[in-house]
Length: 607
Image (cartoon, rainbow, N blue to C red):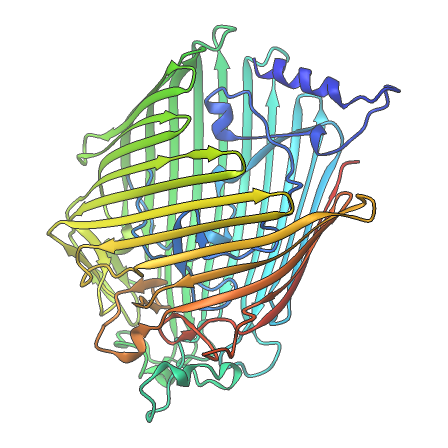
C-alpha cells in the first residue's frame, strides 16, 4: 500500500519533455510513527516562510518553558512534564530541547541527492548551523546525515566579548530500506549530542537594591559563579523492523531495539570561592566533579496489523537500566522492567476514530491507559497512569547536594479536549488540559526533591485564533494556567503570543516576502529558580523580592523573503527595550536577552 502511493506521486515529477525535475515534491519523508501505523502519507521539505524567524521559542505547542535568558541555556517546563511511558527513567532533562530526538527523525526517499543548509547569526553571539544531506543508495534504500552546531556567548558578567555561554554539537545518521513488495521494512538511526553550558549561578544584586531594576547591567553584572561548566553527553540508537505475513498488512511482526547512553557532569575548579552559593561542601573543597551516568536498553517485540477501519498491536518490552554516580561510593540502581502493551484504533465513520492503548509492568504495579476520540472538529483524550519517579529524583550524591529518597508511585489523571472551527479564512480552536496528580514529586525551595501526598490539580486552557485575508495574516494564542496549590507548583496565570504580518509577491513574482511583528506576553509570577549542580529548576520563595518576576512583553519585528529555493529572514528582537523597562526576567536572577539583531538563511538543493 505504501509503495503504491509513492509510485503515483513519482510519476508527476516528469515534465512534458520527460525530463526529470527535482524539487521539494521529489523528496518524500516519513516519521517512524507513520511506518509503524502503516500510514501512506508523506511530507516534503518545508518551503513556508511563516515562522522562519522563530528558531528559539519558549512557547511551543501550548507549553511554556523558562530558560536562563540566553540561547542554549537550560530549559524547564513550567507546567508538569509527564512521561509518555512507564518504567525506568533517568531524569536530567534541562537540555532536551537542543538534542535531536529519536521520534523526530525523518526517514527520506529522494529521487536525487537532497541537501538543506540552515545558518542563523545574532548580534549578541547566537549562532545556529544545521546541515542535512540525504541520498538514495538504491531505489529502496536511503541514507540521511544531519550535523548541527549551535553556540552563544555570555550576556551576564562576561570577562570578554567572546566568552562562550554554551556550545552544542549534534549528529544523526539514519537509514531506511524496504523490499520490492514492501512487506519488509527496516529503519535505523544513531544520534549523538555534546552540550556544554558555562554556568553563572545568576546575578548577585547589590546589597542596597531590593528590586529587579538592579539586574539589567548585562556584561557589567556581578554573577555568583565563574569557571563552572555543565556537560550533557548522550548517544542513542534505534533499529526497527517489520514484516507483513499477509500482503494486505493485516498481520505484521515487528521489533524495535532502542539503546541510550547518557553522561551528565558538573565541574567547579574552585568551590571554596563559591561557598556563598552552595548549600554545603561535603567531600572536596578544592574541586567539584559530580557525575551521573545512565544506560538503558529497550527491546520491543510484537504483532500488529491494519486494514481500512482498524489498527491493532500487542507487544512485549524488555528494559534493562543502569544508573550510576561514578565519583561516589553510593550504589546506583540497576535492574530490568518487563512491560506488556497494546493498542487498538477503530474507524467508526468517515471522520470519526476511537482508540485505546495500555502498558502494564506487573512487577512494579506501574501502568498507563489512554483512550481517545478524534473527529474532524473535536478531539478528546483521557489518560490514567501510575509511574515511578526518575532516578535523579530518587538518588543523587554530589559534592554540594545529596539525597536518597524512597518515594511512592506517582499517579496521574489527564483529560484534554480540543475543538476546531473553520469558516472561510477564519479559524477558531479552543482547548483545555486538566491534570490531577497524587504523590506528585517536585523540587522544593531547598532544591531537593519532595513528594506531595495530597491531590494537585493543574489546568491549562488555550484559545487559538487565526485570520488570513488577502495580504494580511493574523494569529493569536492565549493561555490561562491554574494550579490548585501554589506552594507546590507555581505557574504564570496568562501567556499570550500574537503574530501580525503582511505578505505578497514582488518583482513579477520572482520573490515572496513577509513583513510582520511577533508579540509575546507573560504575566507576573513567582518564578522557579535554577540549581546548576543538579540541572533542575526548583520552587521559588514568594517572600524574596527577586523571585517575584514582573509581567513583560517582547516585540520582535521581522522580514522574511524567499527566492527560488532559498529563504532568508532578518529580525530585530526585543525592539521595545527601554520603553517602560530596560529589561525583563525569565528566571530569578537571570535577565532576558537585550535587543538583538538576527539574520538567517535556509537553502535547499535538490541535485
